[in-house]
Image 1 (cartoon, rainbow, N blue to C red):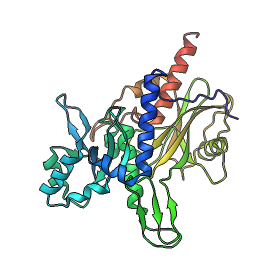
Image 2 (cartoon, one colour):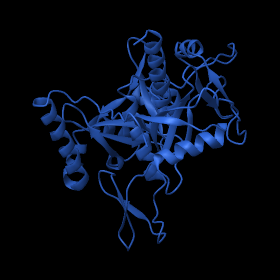
Image 3 (cartoon, rainbow, N blue to C red):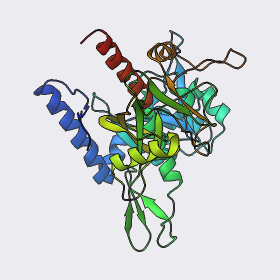
Image 4 (tube, helix red, strand yellow):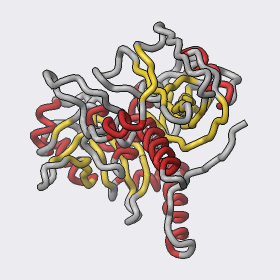
Length: 341
């Protein structure tokens, strides 16, 4: 059983005006998912995030940082027109949410247009999503990852798995309907358990051969059919590093766009200090080892991946990744213990 369960929800604001504003926005978005006419009307007054083959469009700010490039729908239509594309392409936009100013937010992939031409017209550039994680502020990352996940799902869900007939989306893009049987398909996420294992003084991190050089992360694995969160966690740790964990606690969750929309369930787990011998399954991992608090503290100071030719250093996933959050929580706990708290 999970102990010390902690559900981490976003703070919406005071229970009066703040909560009512949130409720009205959520009901507005839900109505757009159900009413095609209302969604199309909202699209004409919306803000649209642009992508090119699933890469988000980012603009450079006056400070030299990057932010998502969002345009009014009317501006998007003008851009399409100047690039020789049909203005009606805007209707293929997918609903992603609503701003605090009650303006609907959509995303649109312009993958059929010339990338350089779009970038020149928008005075912005398309970036690989993984690189975007190091370039954007925390508030923008969830919006970009949700957009990419929805766009990818639509691009890969054009046919009904039961009949082979084409599927048709609703205006919001919140679902697709398959052929003559009318089967409704909704975007899906694959549940993944990610766990930071500790022996009380050290934490265990691992890397796959596909990771960038020097990067280590928490252990993670997909839930098998019929498994609970706990069962997946115990199995993955046993399979990958040959350890048997105990005292599991839940931390938080996160949508993760890689490889194809994962739902990350983050936990902490402990092993007995007398049973810490790691036995790596090299079919799954390139390496796994224990790290001290000092080593982890140094790794948290690395804010961006080392450049090609730089000395090899130990570093962690970006701060927007839930693995980074697990490590940060562990560090805070260790410091609290050392201070006698």
